[in-house]
Image (cartoon, rainbow, N blue to C red; front, side, top):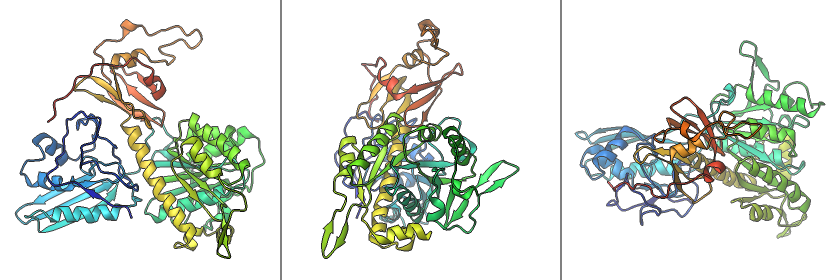
Length: 522
C-alpha cells in the first residue's frame, strides 16, 4: 500500500533557496500513486511566481518565516510534514491548503485540501494524516478537514472550442491496429476512473466501426441536438458521458477520409461535455489523416497504448508510438491484451510473449499492464456492461484499477511539468526553462527569446529574410505572461501585445545565460 512520508517536525520550509538536490530528510519518495501537482526537486523556489496558487496563509508563512509562533503558521508547519510519496513535496508548498480558519481560543482549526483531481488514489490518506498532524498541536481540540478538487481546466492555453474548455485531461487510447482490444481497454479505463470519483466522458472516434454502442447500454441511444446553441448533448450511462457516431442514428459511416475528419471534429468539439476530469478517446486504428487531425486539434494530455503479444501487433503499435512522439504526446502506459490464460494449474501463452515489454524497452514507456484471456471480459463487451462494473473485485478489475492509478498519477505529473516548464523570475530578470522529461534546467535572457521569434511577423516565410531586427527589441524587455501551449511549447505575451509561440525545442537551441544571480536563502 502506498505510504505517506513525514519529515521531522523540526524541518522547515525554505522559500528562497537555489539548489539542485533535495534536502536530506525532507523530500522522501519511495512509492508512486500520488495525484498532487508538485516538483520532484524544488528548484529556484520563489513563491511569487512558481507557486502562484498558494493560499494567503502560505504567503504569510513565506514572508514571516515558518518558525513564527502564530497559530496559522503552526498549523501550516504541521501540515508541511505531509510529503507526497511520488514527487517528494509537501502539500503546503503545492498550494493545496485552502480556506484555513483558526480559533486559538476555542482550539478549533478548519481547512480544505484542494487536490488536482477527485480521482486522487490516496486522498483518504491525505485526509487522515492532515487530521493527525494538526490534532497533535497542544492547543488544538477540534479539527475539521474537507476534501475537494480543482475545477476542471485544460492545460492548453490556446483558443479551444467551447466544448473542450472545461476538460482537465484528454487521454488517447490507441493501438494503430484493429482487433487488439483497444475499445475494451478504453471503456473499462473510463469506468475505472469514474469509480475513483472522477467526472469522465468517452469519445468513440472510430466512425467506420464504432464500438461504444455495443459495449455500453445507455437508456437514450440517440444523441440529441441543442438547436439554439447548435451543440450536441451527449448520452450517458452510469454517470459517464458518451459520444459516438453509432449514437448519431447513422450506423457505420461510408465516406471518404476528409469527410470523416470533419465528422469527428464536429462530434468532439461541439459536444456539451461540461466539466470533466478525464475525457477518454477511443482512437481509430491507423496513423493517417483522422489520427493526425485528432492529435492536432485536441490538446491530448497523454496516450495509453494497447497491443497483443504477436510481433505483427508490435510493428503497428511502434508506428503509433512514433506518431505520438512527433506530436509531443507522452505515452504513459502499455496494456498488453490477451497475454495468457490459466488452466490445470498452469499458465499458457498462446500468442507468445514479449510484445508489450518490447514496446516499453524500446520507447521508454514507464508502465506495462497485462490482461489475461478471460471469457467474461469478452462477454461483458458484448453485453453492454463493462467488466469493471460487472465484476469490480475480479482480476481484470484489479488490473484496470492499477492502470487508473497510473493514468491519474502520470497526468498530474505531466500537468505539473508543463505548468512549470517555462517561467519568468522577476527578481533576476531571467526566463527559467526546464523541459518536461529532462533533468536539464537553464536560464534565458527575455530579449534573446523575443529576438529569436520565428513567426511570419518576424521572418519572411518565402525568403527566410529576417524582418525583426536586433535593435527593434529593447534589452530590458520583460514578458507579461507565459502560458503552456500543450505539451510542446509556451505562449509568451510581450508588452507590445505580441503573442510569441516558443516551442521547447527552439528554446533549447537559444543562447543561455551563464551567470545567473543567486538569491540569498531566507
